[in-house]
Amino acid sequence: MKADLGDKPGALEFSGPDAVRFLNGQITQDVRKVMGTGLVLPSCVTDAKGRLQFRVWIAEGCGGVLVICREGMTEDLEARLTRYLIADDVEVRDVSEKFRIEDFDFPEMDEAERIAKGIPKWGAELKEGMLPPEAGLDATDISYHKGCYIGQEVISRIKSAGKVNRQLTKFVFEGDSVIGEISGPEGKVCGEVTSVSGKLGLGYLKRGVEGEGMSVGRAGISIR
Image 1 (cartoon, rainbow, N blue to C red):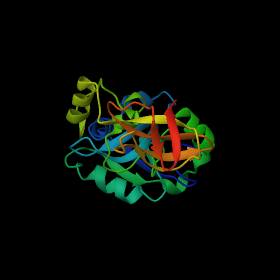
Image 2 (image 1 turned 135 degrees about the vertical axis):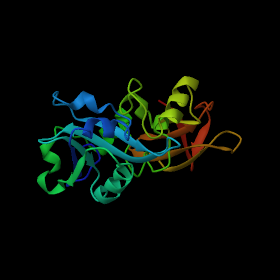
Image 3 (image 1 turned 120 degrees about the vertical axis):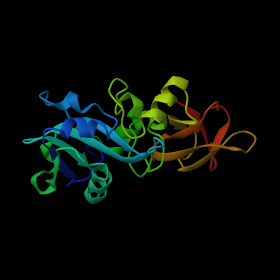
């Protein structure tokens, strides 16, 4: 797996005098960090309520800023970003045909390594409508030191409060590994396992829940 983008990721190139400023008002990452540095950084595209719409990667392109997305999402991503493109001097081009996943220096890992490192994946731990800090993306995808962007107020409020209603968590299974809802000793659902590999799992626990005595299916689990 390379950055959870598929073999043929989508790529949009934003160019023009206002490209960096425009994108900084649309995504959670600070676009200035990739300009002239050779860095490729992850970012989120969120709605006005701070909820995840897309996870993307940004890099400096030949003529502007590249926004790299999952295979098959280019058209929807372009529609979302250009919805707010009104008076800015920005040109947007779909340059997906120019790139393959090998063109970007993403680390490669298998599912077992991904789960062991606690890295969320789209369709499993990452889904449209969730809050990025729930999956720990505030540590990798979000800049708290730049100007406003769509959803910034909500995400900053979560950081100030210091808590979310659920948190990405690694698990160790005592029995068979099972994907599904997690129940506590009293039978109340308190989380969910979303990915498994061997005796390791990845998923979510509700805030304030401890790991002792939990079960998923017939398998006991503990927090790692």
